[in-house]
Length: 238
Image (cartoon, rainbow, N blue to C red; front, side, top):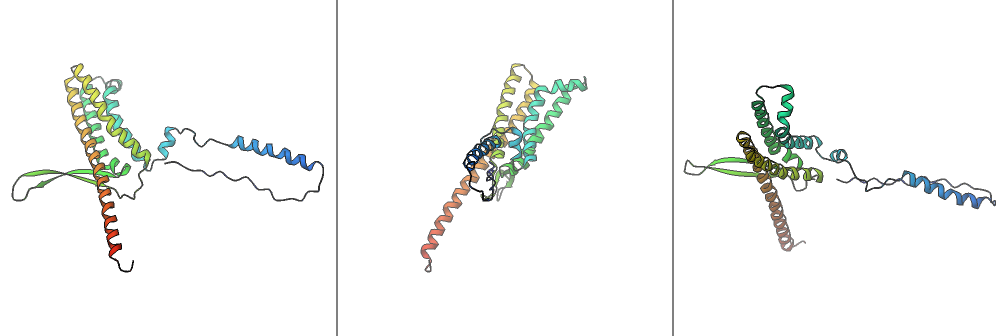
């Protein structure tokens, strides 16, 4: 979201009658450079590069965006540096504690992304229902996608951060999985596989939800135009 700041007009000095003199012309000539110097001193370029904090302030949901960034990055950070951090506090059962913390962070990231971040940042939500088929005892899984009102404003900063981290995290987990295989860390590999499955589930679900929302919007737009044109032709008072 870009902000527009109007440039304030120069202060208008009321007309004052001045007696004609020879020095009047020189005073008018010397006043222009002073005004130009003031404008150049107070002028700030409009295309000045913004910092990350300024961009975060432009978010429509800054708290939700910060929580989303935290839960996306915290599991990977804890996976890489967790043993070093835990060694400061304890020297016993570090692996078990590290494993439990990672499971909690990955689960919290999955829940936050699915239920809060997607709905607030990009207006998308998904869930999975289990329905019983008619006349049988068989069950089927149904993916349900929900998108916000098309007239709702989606902040470009929220959208960019959301989609970037949505796809970056599974790629990072894939790299860590390769490293776990090379180091023969089978227990950590199990954790990484769980993290990849949860992260990919959200990535695939939100991608389908976004495509479904856009297709539904296009279909509704075509239908409204077709029915509007038909009613306008059939309306005798048009």
